[in-house]
Image 1 (cartoon, rainbow, N blue to C red):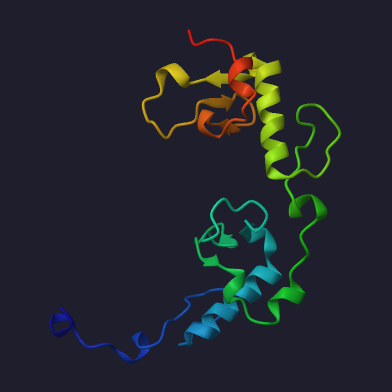
Image 2: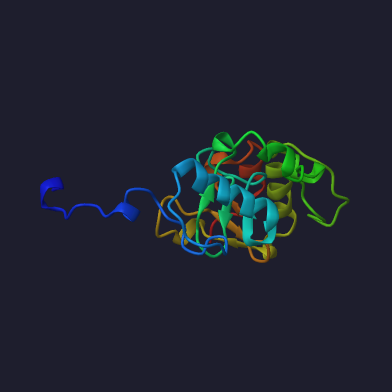
Length: 169
């Protein structure tokens, strides 16, 4: 394949950021480009999704640009970035349930949060869709909250849940 490709032009040998972030395009090295993205994150945090507190996969990016889709990971951030970023708020360090289910919010561990969702399902079954009998995909959730979109799978339910659930229709 390499032999069939046309030769690179000078400005293609190094990546160029075209008007990003609103500057004159100049050939830049990869570290320079990465620094520009980090600078844009610091200067325009509203243009980026901050995923640090709710990553479901450790390999997912910490930040994603809302328009361009550019992604950034804290593990590859320049040394100066950490001190420039706003700290995670206490309620972002550990998930909380905000008024869910209609109680005062307290930081909770993931197992505690899961238990609260299961308790809500048992106490308020009308607020949840029960997908157990008509799942088209085995990986689909068994229950989904009608308002919040929270999902639950029987395979990860606490031991007490099975006896509390209404029978399948």
